[in-house]
View: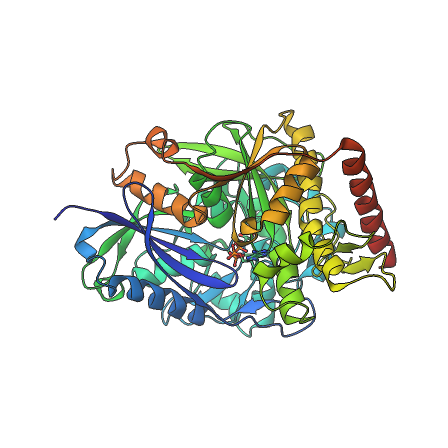
Length: 497
Ligand SMILES: Nc1ncnc2c1ncn2[C@@H]1O[C@H](COP(=O)(O)OP(=O)(O)O)[C@@H](O)[C@H]1O
Ligand SMILES: O=P(O)(O)OC[C@H](O)CO
């Protein structure tokens, strides 16, 4: 029976998706399921790892039962995931010992401050390309070891395992046969030396994390094991690709040359620039990270992480009840000639690149009696574009590479107002590809390359098609004025702390 599809599993912050891609890189069928977000204290965000596994099992079963395919026709599975989110579970029972602590969660901010005061920052930056922030996995693992009775002793004895969501899912899918992760996910833990390509003993000692609980780090494109027949429609399928979702999107956007940049507009925004075999060290708050490793060769990326983007739109809908759907924001924003001086800083969980300020919180500025719902909606959408400009400016300086075009994807990239404003503000062309699910596509490509479903990146790059291109059309004075006021708003929000 010939192989017709790759099954991609995209486990995101708010939902799990499974998508079948054909040889042309087209999404043939997909299924999606949301799961519970827990906010046990202000600033904390947690997920139930078993509920995540259930959601993944369900969406995979939905595809495999849809009649579109049979497991024998699926060449491989690729897994991509919300990064940094930490799960610790019992090796024998498969039961998590605590809820998954999500990348957005700030419950370890105090611990991170202690690490900063202890002077760990230089070593961490030097070895991992990251900085000390509760965003990364290490402090989350440590928090679980400190707060769950007996966890530390059990972890030291090798009875507890740690994994980011890729590791957790591959472990579950293979029935506990594989405890692995890939370079891109390992590079987000704060424990992995991205130059030596090894877990770093000194960092493990500093952070108090036992090596026995860590997964084996493998390339992003190889067979890690087989998904058990019971989860995938009756016959085992090789799991042959894994990458963190932002690196997977860079891969799915075919950003294979140095200097190519993508921005994913989801819950947060993540800009990644391919820097090839060279790791660029940032002096402007960008992260140096592993993009992927394939066939014995790793590539690096520069990353800017924006914590709140689409989540601010969700807040307009669910928190303020100002809108009934995310999609209507585009029309509302375009219905007023400008923002009427209203600016919004969506620092719900602090600010990431380039500010790295965990204490700052969200604010609206410039409200008058003339301010309408439309202005507020517009200010929220504009804030996504301003944050992107903050990051891209830092990227161009640190890499010395000017941006020719920005490739975009993710839920909010479907908003034409936002994309046009983004292009205007950056003075750069913004390109949205025909396949918007580039994250899932990237994981599919990584898995497909490992099993010979695609021949190489050249073939993949030829599949990338543009769906919409936005060209800049704003006068430079206006661009500068808007951006100056945004910077003032950020400074004021930070001063309020
Ligand atoms: N048309 C739109 N305009 C603005 N924001 C949108 C639009 N469609 C979706 N979003 C936002 O994008 C996010 C969903 O995008 P998605 O890529 O699925 O995110 P994630 O993978 O982080 O869960 C949500 O936060 C939603 O509010
Ligand atoms: O699940 P997403 O798309 O919001 O992505 C989350 C990032 O991987 C966090 O670093």
